[in-house]
Image 1 (cartoon, helix red, strand yellow):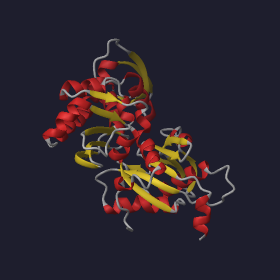
Image 2 (cartoon, rainbow, N blue to C red):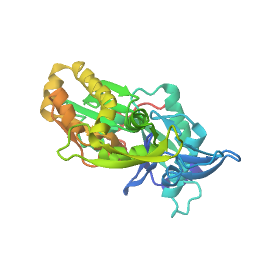
Image 3 (cartoon, rainbow, N blue to C red):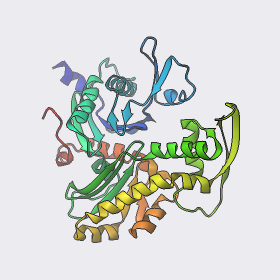
Length: 346
């Protein structure tokens, strides 16, 4: 009874619970949370020190007694308690101006398409422990396609490639369902490690995660750029242990990223090969839609077009596609209920 009363005064939420970032859509307001899925913990007393942006600043700078963790790995919950606390922190932050001490929102949550029942239950339990009164689940490529405003309920082919932090979801969607798909544990964070490994092997230089991500944002590309770029990177010399800097080019970074990018493109081709011919002809006409943070990599759309011969487009604001999709479902739960997947208690 009290849960229902509190629920009437709570903001219902659409949640993209990602490996790299958590985005939350509030009904009637849009996306209000967009922060890293990172938590800093004092291991001496298990106290949470920071969550989100503040915790990410601590990566690579923390003393031994402070653990900075990502509680989600490959898009699934790897640390239940920390995920629960992180999600509760974001829920409380959204309701900070409310008189409610215990908000009870409904939540629409995007999950990877190959998630197991055990992994699905971990997401549900974390959300319920964080205060949710009702959970709805939707596959991430479906949510991304809705966020991209694709007509997925119609009898036409829609192809979505969502490159997140921990997973890449590739799906052909028609008539409200996934016709052919692949879910890869190869995505944005893997690209950061490609840069870290390249700097180690080529220059004997050890880069931090934040430094590698910054290099990816500035120099990273999948296709030759008209203007050559060079930047200085700083790290620790693996031989002397002392600070050192080197200059690195966009061509070197493109080489470093090539293996992971080619894995993604090979799987896009694989999904195309298993798609019915009638849908392929429509996809060729309508194009491949790129979303997720990885879609921001410069020239990726051009390389995919070159390799598949299918027109490829990056949607506007690709990072928020899943969160926008969960929000659209939230605004019309009754009309879009057929897009949801069963929860473990149904």
